[in-house]
Length: 368
Ligand SMILES: [Mg+2]
Image (cartoon, rainbow, N blue to C red; front, side, top):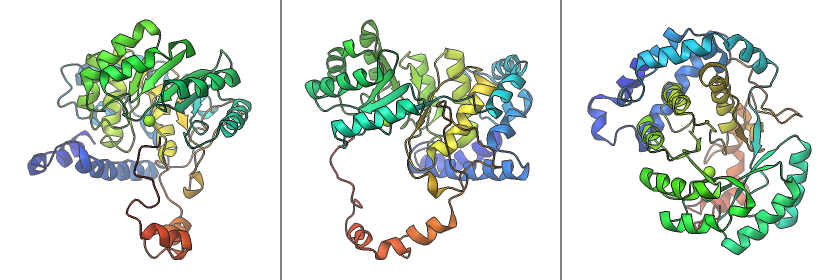
């Protein structure tokens, strides 16, 4: 798999913006499909296929090019061997759905009224959630009001995180977040451009005395950028995205580098199908790589579109996938309904309106 990744990303194709943008997304799609088929051929869920590999086999699935200055194959092997001694116990925990605690983002969208947020938070607390992430960036006073009552609902023991989806310049992020320090936020997510590695480092250093961390990763294209973010001490959480990096191959190198730098991996999984994929990734991180429990985003929508839908337990853990493959099979009925433009949805009034709108009903301005 390591060689396959390199073959796909090399050759003349490197003159077309290598390992980023649409080429990287396509690489991800092809490699995800190969991993899915491999796991199905072995009749195992993907996380188990990886967990059952020896450290030597695992190292062969990765491409260390461009990151060997911080992680060599030999170092990776040593790290994996160390964790292999205790892996069986963690696999047992995974089989009991106790590997990956969930955090909740479904309550925190800016489009919800305060009453709706309160209702969603209370129900999420009852479901076992203790970590909550909310969208912010409405203005210091508006954010303070909203986050203040959220803090009231979830109590002092609740862990709060905020996300502004690249809203600010670097110094603006620092000044803004300082004013929210008393709300005890674990981290600010995507405070600025995802490409600004040194900017994230500056924000993190400035906010550290205020007890606020920095997280990013959902728009990081490749292992090289994660390497630099880690080298620059720019992150408190690595939010890799299972649909953006070059599949499990590249994710494994990022998991290993994160473990080496002691930074927890908290994958981005806030979109359709992403919880399905990331529950494999977080289980692999726990069982095989870091040996530590981290949290994984759980958004409660669109799971019905998948053959092996993600779910959480009453204790607030992700249900560990059991169906062979990478949990990415979309149900046939979804294609019949939504395939554009022939699916039944597109002849409905709403579908017709969306067809005439280049943004498909999504507002152009920043709303989350
Ligand atoms: Mg985000």
